[in-house]
Image 1 (cartoon, rainbow, N blue to C red):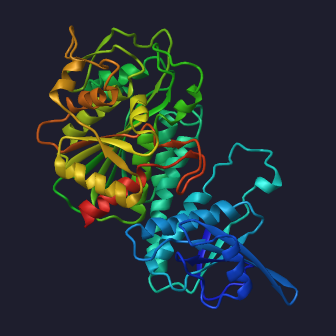
Image 2 (image 1 turned 90 degrees about the vertical axis):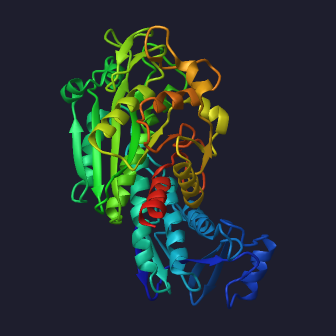
Image 3 (image 1 turned 120 degrees about the vertical axis):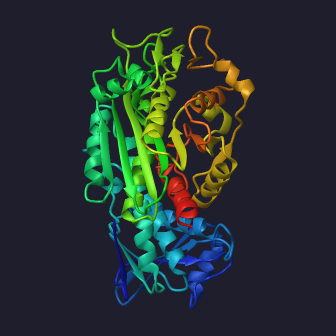
Length: 481
């Protein structure tokens, strides 16, 4: 979408942001009475449309609510206003929208534009016969009368939008298009020229390192696994902050085969990896003053004659052995080797891993929060705060020795699943066994957040891009603040 800051616009469609209980200055009686009769009250995201004519032309004015002025949720409400405009006019037949920026602060203008752009995102690559009234039409936003600094604020916000959109793209693509090697290729292409340093480990390299846990997941697939590392050095820090993403590009469950109904959703089992890749793009685009390493383990979990079996024992890169009770608990096998590799490569300031790890997390938190487990209070608090500020919300869950005992194996160091109860917690306990003492670490189980069955704050049905804004906000507040 083309977004321009202009001094005047001749667009037929105009939009004004309105506070709760207020009307635009100079509103005529027809506009005021129409809004009142429609019960328009300026609530966040509430929209009222008014047509007026004169001199042979008809203009179209949208009033969009931004809620009460001066609240802590002001920026989020501004995003809702922008998202409401996108939802209403994205396929309306209008090509240009003039946004009145008068009276809005620079960061408020940027927030409206961010909500508008993110809600406008759609992936029509495989649609060949869309009806005309469903085709996107809105291609240009002209911002009129914006405050000084609004264009610069939008430049920063647009970097966030680009990262979220990249994560959504990766999650949306089907499993026959995005698999380990093609994920790497797409990330390389998108990050080319940004200053991000890229390293890729192939099967031979991972075998030499002893990554038996990650490689075991990939045994049943013709798609070769990969480890992708992306480094943004925006400052000379003593220790980089590390983000690790689960990248199971398609998950059948392996020999512990999933039920057929809904299996098509498992193309988004790489949502953690997509969030990390999108975050690295955002950090590079906005030239973040931070040293960040993003690592994703990429595999496809399929059943064939070479697939690992329930009861098999694999040896992880750390040297710890794992009895594979359920081949559908594969994400933790991928992540544990990634965690070990990271700690052998660098001395992390902190590690945050993201994974669509357990269905139990959806049962626990639904689709409202991602779960967070952490061994460090400061890290947990910083991530919880970043979640509130960004809108990618988190809810903390416990770790403890009593849970840890549930994954002890009678024949190996551990087993990859515990009993049915506490499934998300035992998965986190499993990962904690691969974190070296003294390393701040947080595990984010985002199984319920990367894909939406209905439109949300700034997304339509489908991929949400969850995690990019969370990690970017964490970097802003903790590393750059």
